[in-house]
Amino acid sequence: MSQYPSTQLRDDEVDLGDLIRALWAYKQIILAVTVVSTLIAITYALVATKYYTTQSMLRPVAMNVLDELNASGLYELTPEEALQRVGAGISSYEYRLAYFRANQELFGPDAMADGQTPEQALNQIIDDFEVSRPDPNRVDGSFSYVGLAYTYPWGVKGADIVNGLIAYVIQQERVAIALDVEVIIRNRLAKLEQRMAAERAAYQADKQAKVASLSEKDSLKRAKLKDELAALRKQLRTRRDDRISQLNEAIQIANALGIEKPSTPSSLGTATHIQTSGNVIRTEVNNQQIPLYFMGVKALEAEREVLQKRRSDEFTEPRIAEIRSKLSMLEQNHEIDLLKQRDDEDVFIENYAKWRKEAAELKGLNLNLSKLPLVNVDRQAIYPKSAVKPKFFLVVGFGALLGLVFGLFVAFFCLVLTRNQK
Image (cartoon, rainbow, N blue to C red; front, side, top):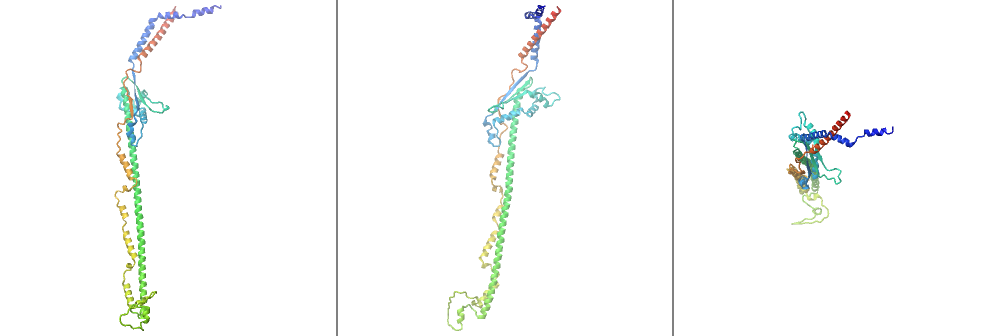
């Protein structure tokens, strides 16, 4: 009983050498299957659509290339920023779609099937594009290159597509920069015009205020001078009336004393006692004012008559002539006339010359941005000599290996089937 299991185990064991010799008997089947599989792999490698990969590499331009744009003071763009803009444009779906619509013949006759929209056709091939950039987590943080690779099937002009797409994006970015510069210039000119318009309005208001202030001052001066003139005239009239009243009173006194001609108090007292003959000149020194009636009736009446006939007393007061002169000068203010007669008032505005110069510089700015080199095409896309898939030798080798495995499986199956029949 103890020897039975071991004997059964030895009967079930398979000798590897015997198995190999048994399978070798079916070598023709194995070889045939392997050959057929290899031929199928070769046929597939030859008949299957070949795919190729082309790539273009972009690098930053030199700093002096963008000097004209940066020197304008309107727009600042570094070579790294220009490269980033182009890289973002290459990845832009909008730019790719526009390029696809304009250059659909480059993508081959099967690029867009019947009933498809350009968006749907582009979505089928958009994953074939690959944009490479430096790692954003790099320590130096530099942006030194942008690459665009495109994997395309036979019949598609892949190198032309890559080079054309890059050229299209560069041109679109040039147009975008030119539009940005144009908008900046237009906005700055608008701001300058607003400043100048505001300064003109402020100047006009200031000029009107100054004219009104000068006119008001002149009017006030004229009013004061006229009031002073009227007061002086009234004063002179009163003074003349007072003088006439004094003369009337003196005439009455002189008539009562019988003084016909100018006399003195001393001569009046001795007139009846002293008789003189010939020419006599008398002199009297007196520090007191002699009363008016000693002038005599004739002199007093003559002065009164003249005063009564007088039509104006202005010649007796020098201040009146001075007032008239001032009034005559106030009739016309030359400062006001000059302010009103200004033709080109902008020249009197502060900072106007500087703003005008800045506006002229902006209008005369001529930046040639149509050929602005934003990036340096370090390597253009070219047509490769070999396909990336299918790889001929890899496919043939895999087919042969698969055929060998399948041939061994068929031979082993036949071997088992033969033994069972025995």
